[in-house]
Each structure stands twice: as structure tokens, then as C-alpha cells.
Image (cartoon, rainbow, N blue to C red; front, side):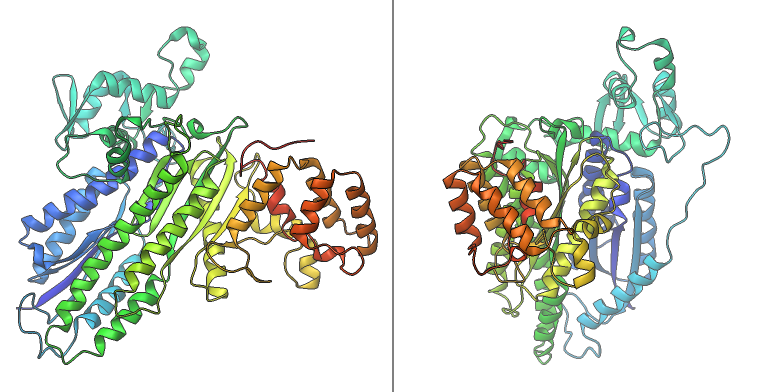
Length: 578
């Protein structure tokens, strides 16, 4: 009987998470996917005879394991897809399998194909499944009412007839509670949550009759299930602890206060910080490891050792990501005893981190997380067969108005994260990079176009940025091509400590960008600016920029001035505006 190696993988996760800007729904979506991956999928495998030793790994939305026949593989694929369709409507799952000669615990010395070849074939089959895409339903018909939370699905649940609607979609309602996967929630609490999220006031005097009629309190099944699961984040009765919130609860216990809106994490000027980090170098590391194992093909246990390595690696990667974030949070917030809302953790697992924080903390928190993660992975790699490899994390950080739609925050952060990752590979660095952008009123700004406008001469002279040096490296010696982000933060903090006038920084920035003035004119104007400043401010500039009035050109100064100006309000405390 043929055996198979199989994978089930959650895809398009970000589309599922950011279907709405409502933080509670996003949180519930994240927890729901963790629940399916860590509770539901293992139960399906167990019920189909997949033993613990048959599982290579389960985590971060992915599961890889062995099955005894093609029929079982197809049965598991159907059951997993059905579970996701019912419990997480509109989530996307792919399943694929490939033949293998490998037998768990058996003699594999005579196998013609090695397990790493089967895994490569499985990856090809999975890519084919992903390329097929997913069907989409057109709901733009007259008379179809849309969900008031996501606006993309038809509304199936109304607060006016909640119990009836819950029963119509197959949920168990008993004793004025809705029961979902061994978790119960009072109907009255669910009604109150839907009203608040859809904007229906619980106090009729708060809104006019016309305003009350605008919202009906109608939502789709997808948002309903996410909402119910958002309540499970604080569920202490669950046998298996899932999601990063459990790591936080173990450390901070009752000090965690979850927000209900993204605006709960804004500063006094209505800005929030949004970060997305992703691992670098994983593919190269696994390829190098595979090559090392291939050198031991005559070892009868080499395939077993390779699978054991994959299992341990997935566990270590996930643990190091969560531990690194928790350590970074502790380092930041231990100095802020009055802070109760630490952040909103939308994705934490595998090698991904996506979170919302106060804008004055998000950059340093991201940098600390990346640095700690690199150190942990470096220590781990030293104990493997691929000691020369490196696994790091590159990050994109957006500081934007709290009303910016969540999906736009993520799209912009993802664009910056890819920019940071590209910089790492461009310089073959063994450290991650961070890119950042402050966006004022428009979350949909074209970052690439905006940066070209900022650096007009860049397009003509084909040289480095004139006023920006981002993306920055996390942990590297500075050079003319690569700059260290910690030094940038230190510079900003030192400027604030000596109360360096922010308007003077802006003046230097505008002077740097002025294309009408020749370099000599800029230099003279700059000297004029300096002549009106305090000695300590002049000395700071001379020491930090190594300015020599007689020999250096002004064009060589302040290549990071826009980075400083843009981050001045978000790194190192209050700024002096004068």
C-alpha cells in the first residue's frame, strides 16, 4: 500500500484578518485561525488514524504529516476544508499530498527516493493547488444587504432577531446563550457587542432618529464567528493555550487591558503605530540543511534525523518569535509601569509578527524584537549543520492616523517590510532591516511615488537618497551604504535632550531639498542658520556630522535629515517646537 506525505496550509491569511477595521473582529479572526490550526486540525488527524509520530509539524497555519493511503489523504483534505468553511467562513485552505517510500520507524535504507525529495515534490503540488485560486461570489445585486462590519458579505444576522438568525445558520442556542465549540456567550452580551460595533447606540438619546435608522445592526456569519471568538481570548478554561495573548497573560496576569478600537492605542495627535515583521533567510537555511543531510545518505537514520530536525526547527522558530516579542515588550514596558494597554497582537507565530502599538513606542519595540530574534536564531543555528547560515527579521513600520483602515495599514507595512528585506539581500547582510513611514491623513498614499518626490535629484543623478537613508540595519557596523537604526534613534534622543529646535531641523531639511540654490549658496545659508543657534546646538551638529566649513560641500551633510524630522515626534519623548 502506498504511503503519502501531506500538507494542509492556510493561505490569504491577511485577507481574512483585515476584512474590517474593527479591532475586536480582527482579534477574533486571528484567534479563530489559531484555534483551527492548533485544536481542530489535530483532532481531524487523530480521528483519521494519524499518530503523533506521523506528524512532522503543526503550527503557524501549516501542518505536514504522513498518511497510509490516498483515500485517507483525500478524506482529511475534505474534512479540514469543511471545518474551515463552517467555522471560519471565507478563510482559504489548500491541501496536497505526494507519494513517499518513507516509513515512520521502519527501515528506509533501501528507499530509492529520500524524504527531502518527497517534500520538494509536495511543495510543487502545493504551489499548483495555490495557483488554481479560489471562487468569488458577486453580491452586488439589488436588495442584497451587506454586513455593516466588513461590507463584503451579505448580512445574515440581525440584532432584532438574533436567536432566530443564530439557529438558522446552525448555531446552538440554549438558555439565552449561544454555544460554539464548547464555549458559551450570553445572547445579551452578544447583542450589546454587535450594537457597539455597528454603531447602534444603546442609549436612544445619544443619536437622532435619522441616525438610528442608518444602522440596522446586521452582520454576516463570518464577522459573527470572529466576534464570538474575540471573547475567547480571555478564556482561561481552554485546555490548550493558544495565541500570543496566553504568553502575555502568563507574564502580566491581570495587567493586560485589551482595546476595543485601534484608536485605543493612539497618542494625543491621533497617531497609532503598526508593525509587520517577517523572517529572512529561512529558505536558504533549510536548503543548506538539506544539502548537509544529503551528504549522509548512507546513514540509515538520516531521513529520520532530517524529519526530527524539521519538527524541532518549526517549534524553535515559533518559540523564538514569541519569546523575542515578549522580551522586547518587557524591556520597553517595564519602564512604563502605568501602561496597561501593551498593544494589539494580530499575528504572532512562525516567523511573523503583526501588531498595533502606541506610535511613540512602535519603532523601538520593533527594533528590539528584531535584534533579540536575531540573537536567538544565531544561537540556535550554531547547534545545527548549517552554522554559516543566518535567519533574521525585516520589518515595516507605519505611523498613521488611527482612522486609517486596517487593511491599508497592513498593505503599507507589507510594502515597507519588502523594502527592508530587499535591502538585506542587496547587501548580503546577516542582520535584518527596518523601513518606516509616517503617513498623515491619507492611508492610501503611494509610498514609492512620495519618496521620489522627496528625493527629486535622485532620479536625475542616480545616486543615494539626498535626505533619507532608510531602510536601516538592525545590528551592523555603519558604512557609506548601510546605516544602523539604533544610531538614528540615539541621535534623535540626544537632539531632544539638548532641546534642539525642531523648526531648525525643518529649515535644514527644506534647505537640503531646495533645487533652486547652488551648493555654495546652501552652505552660506546653513552657516547663517548656525550663527543664530546656541553653542550646544552648534557643537552637536559639528560633532555628529563632522562638518568642516572650509572643505566639505553642503550636499554631503544631513543625508538622513528627513528621517530625523519625520521621527522627531515618535522617538524619545517630547519635542521642542521652537
